[in-house]
Length: 440
Image 1 (cartoon, rainbow, N blue to C red):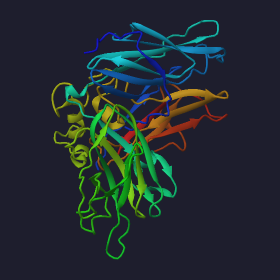
Image 2: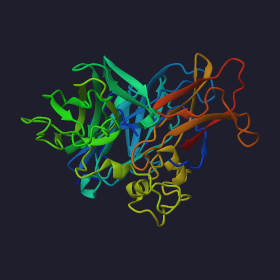
Image 3: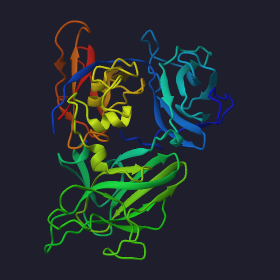
Image 4: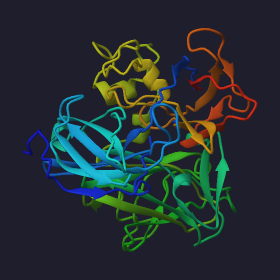
C-alpha cells in the first residue's frame, strides 16, 4: 500500500480545467442561506482517478485579481501548490509556474490530504495561503462504487439536435434528436477503472402509426458503435414517458433479440468519451449514470422517500452515512464541520462528509466593476427524483443588520448546473450577498 505521507518528488502534470466535467433530481423542503465567503483564489477539485493502491487528484484554481489591500495586482509570476496530511501543515511544496492547475499522483487511499496554493510575484514576494481544500479517496476495496452523473445537454452537441425544457427532466432540460442517423451528444468523464454499466433516462417521441421509435447509436472512446434499443419491453403507450434503461447492445442480434443487456464496458483508469448518436428522430435523452455498481437500479437510488420524516431522503442518507438514523445523520448534525448542517447540505446538493464541499458565493472584479457569481447545482443523484433546485440571490448593506432583499432578475433560478453571474451596475450599492436555496 502507498505510504500515507506524500512523496514530494511525485510526478506533477499541468491540468487543463476543461478536461473533466463533474456533474453533481415532490415535496417542498426547508430553505437556508449561507453568507458569502471571499478569498483571492478558490481551490477546487476537477476530478480524481485511482488504480491499484494509489490515486491521482487533478486540481485547479482561479487566479487572483488584486492585492490584499485592494490595489490592482501586477507582476504575478506563478503559484506554489502545498499539500500534506495535516490541516494547515503541508509537507510538500511544488512550484507549478504560471499554470492554474496541477495533478498530484501517488496518494494513498483512506487518507485525508489537504491542499492550498500561494501566489508569488516577479520579486519573489509570496501571498498568504488561499484557503484549504481537503480530499479523501475511498478505494473499491473499501466498498465504494463510482456513480458518475452526466446531463445529456451538457455534452458537446453535434447538430442537428435540440435542447428543450421540461419540468419533468433532470435540471429542467433534455436533448431531442431532430433527424434520423444524424446529431447527438458527446460527454467526457473520468473513472478509477474496472467494469461499468451505463444507465440513461430516456423517452420516445410521439407515436407514429401506433409505434414508438427510440434508439441511439452508442460508442465509448471511438470504438465501433452498437445500437441501444431503449425499453423495448414497454407497451407503446408508456414508451413516450420518461423511463430509466440500461444501455444495451444488439451485437449480432436484432431489436427483438438484444444480445448485450446490459452492455458492460471495461474501462481503464483515466478519461473516457461517451458518444450517443441519433438513430431515430425525436428520441429524448435526459440524465445519464455511469457506475461500477453493476446491480444498481436508478429508480431505487434516486427515490426521495423519507421514512423517518427528518426532511432528508432515505437514499441520500444511505449513500453518505450508510444509515438513516444515528449519530451524525440527524438534520442538525454537521459531521464535516464546515458550518452547514446535514439538511442544508441535502438541500444545496453538497457533500455532508467533506468540509470542502459547501454552497458558496464568489466576488471578484472585471474591469474595475464588482461581479458576484455562484454555481447552480441541478437536483440530481441520490434522493432527488422528481425534485428541482432553485436559487435566489439576496443582498444587504450590513452582514448583521437589515433585511435581505432579492437582487432583481435573480429570483427562483432553476438550477441546471450553470454558472450564475451578477455584474454590479454603476448605480448599485455594493454590500453582502448570499444565496437562498430550495427544493421543490
